[in-house]
Structures are given as structure tokens and as C-alpha cells.
Length: 316
Ligand SMILES: [Zn+2]
Image (cartoon, rainbow, N blue to C red; front, side, top):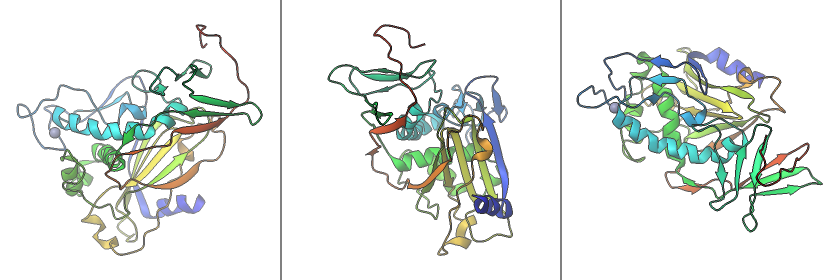
């Protein structure tokens, strides 16, 4: 990890570093009169009535709002965010990330459900509709859900949208192809390569909300470096992190055909030290597929103890 940190410190500048909260005082990006940064339109051609979150609420952002996203673009992005939401549903629930209505609930589609109580997971398991399997000997709890289908490339577009929302105008001007792709409702029209096959460096840190504050970091390649992508973004929240390359075909013409090493951006700087229960695990995941697929149906936890709550009693 030291080598990875050194790579970014040597070859990249921090273009964006934003930290946001689930709730609190709003921070407003942009100014009025509103101009949409994605379609360049203004009132009355478009409206700006909806509150546009710079980072999706499902990623733990309730406070960072942008004025430069029109309602039409906002509605289009909601479909990509839906892909991101479904891709992360099991992990978010597992990680106790606070979402739009508090904590996301996981259901099997029938009666059983898992919610986050004040002292731990509240598992309501109905006969014939199993959701959690407890192994007292191994001290594991396996949560199983009916995963929902999502488009990996749609989730990728949702991540690109975050970067394009937060980057400065000067950087935005360098990625017009990515802006154009975001203007399209589907995934194939105006699709632009990121030079890595839409590789996403995933990260997971065990523990109760070790990344307590949603963080976005955008790194910009230094002019002296010519062996890596121009823009790399990291989104970290809850237990999770997502690192992607932003499509920048003009800037990245210099790396086409060259082998590229994808280094994980270390996330330890964003962790609450007393909440991390182990080392961060990184893995590579391709988000290239435009076809809907379903994620893992289950996740396994190790536990220290279980308290049985009688039906009807409070979870607290
Ligand atoms: Zn717009």
C-alpha cells in the first residue's frame, strides 16, 4: 500500500477532495441563475425544481447539493443511480449505511426482513421464508436476499456523473466526450472508453461504518507523468470504496496501447481508526457489461454474541 500511496503522491494532484454527511447543513455547489453543466441549458428550456445531490443519497450524501443539474438530467441520472443502488444494496444494508429513509432494509420479497436496530441488526425471519442462517459453532450469520438485477455499466455511469459534478470547470472542459455520454438515456449511445475496460477497484473495510463520512477524491495526472490515466476518482462510504478511471479520450490518447497498472488509492486516511475491525481488502471488478445481472444473494458475518428478541418487542 505504501507503494500505491507513493505512486499517487508522485504522479497525481488532488483535483477534488469532498467530504459530506448524511444530514446537516446543506453545502451548495454552483450559483443562480442555474445553468445545467450536463446539457448547458437554462430556464425556461429546462427547470431546476428538484434538489440535485452531487453524490447520490444512497452513498450517504444528504448535504452536498448542486445548482447546475436540471430536472431532466436529474431524472436521467436517477436510472444510473438505481443501478448503483441495486449493485450495493446488500453491502449497504450490511454496512449500516444511512440512506434516504434511515437505514436501507433488505427483504426476501416475502415477509422476512432485516433492519438496523439501535443495538444491531434486527432480523425478522418468518417460517418458510429464511433470510439469515446462524451457525452458533462457527459464530457466523449468513444473510440471504433476493438480489435485484442491475446494469454494471449503468452503475459506472453513475460514478462518472459524481466526478463530473464535482470537478472544476477547467477539468470538465477536458472531458466533453464523457459529458456527452451522460446526456444519453441508454448505455451504448456515445459510449466512450476509459482505457481500462471499466475496471473498478473495489474496497471493503470491516467494522461499524469505518468510513463515517462519505468522501470523494478526484486525482489529476501531473504533466510530467505519461503512463497512467488523466483522472482517477475514489468514492468511499460506509465499508465500501469504488475507484474508477474517468473517460478522457483526448487526455488519455498518450496511454492508448500502453500497459497500465491500476493502483488502489489507499483509504486509510478516510477511516475512523477505532471503527475499522481489520485491514481493507481490495479487488478488481469490471463494470463493462451493459446487460442486467444479479449480485451475490448472500453475505456472511462473524459475530460475538446474539440476543434473541421476542416477536413484537423493541429491537433496542
Ligand atoms: Zn440538464
